[in-house]
Image 1: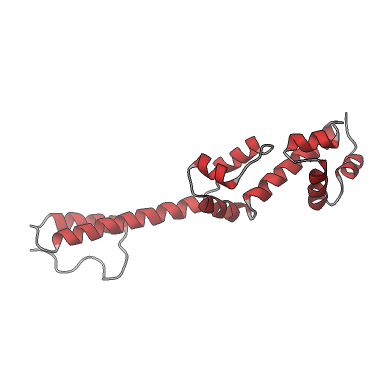
Image 2 (image 1 turned 120 degrees about the horizontal axis):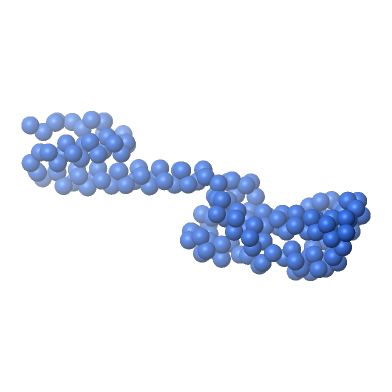
Length: 167
């Protein structure tokens, strides 16, 4: 005889193991009119549970692959669309998970990488500001100087003077 009620009450989401157990119970009895519908519903609920679980886990993880990609190509022109296509996810999802982890946009993160690289070059070398700006991925020295001053509070020249270049 088939059990009269499912192991959970109506409207309560099944855990995947409970749903799997219920499918096995359902399959053990001769099919009736509702069997196929019950099985389809349970399978869809298991898929929904697994999908929700996957997205919850992936949203908590730090997108390390994206960080590595940004670090490797920070000096190149990078767009969100290009990054999203490279890693195979939607640009909106990419922007959302990155911002959740880093409290900044991908663009702001890349700009910080460029400025950190430029600050290191200002201290380690005697390269011109325009050469450092181009190597770091800025369009020109003026763009570099404005970004550097906004981020560091001083111009690149003042920074280099204060830090004392070693070369």
